[in-house]
Length: 192
Image (tube, rainbow, N blue to C red; front, side, top):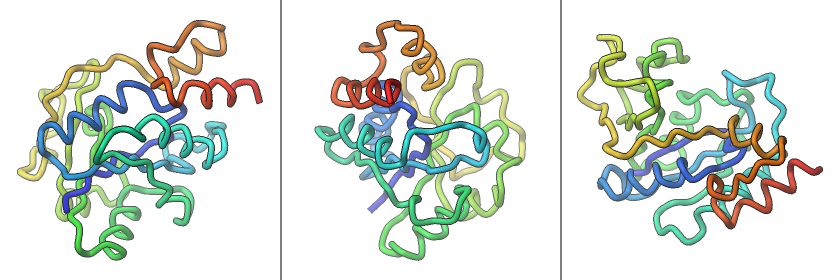
């Protein structure tokens, strides 16, 4: 089975995340998408996050009715911070029967050579790059032009979790940005 590993803090999960996961399946780039809830993103170690189980519950609620997409707590048992290479190595060891594909945004793809063990990831795993505002194929360094990389053909979702948190903290309505099943859980995290 081909499993796309779509990692993030998902603080909060938003409609763009869900649409990207759906697009991966609709384009037949994977059989399943695992939303990999990370306890600690190496690039955001100073960010205060709601508890792991709250973000997992939020993501699980958002995708509960989408066949093939599920929220995963897999990284909760791995050393902190979670580096994608370490997670992928561990998944490959624990689930040798599956093929894992890394799904990342174009904003991260253009700086991928700064990731820990980036060459290992490229050499051993497929990569799905989804569009992000201001980042396109023309921005990619030559060393990242690789046969195992697929650019996801999906609409551009110009929304971020940071923007949603800021809007919600200001009292703005974010109901059109966060999946309805996850919205109440997210709003509760702001009030706790």
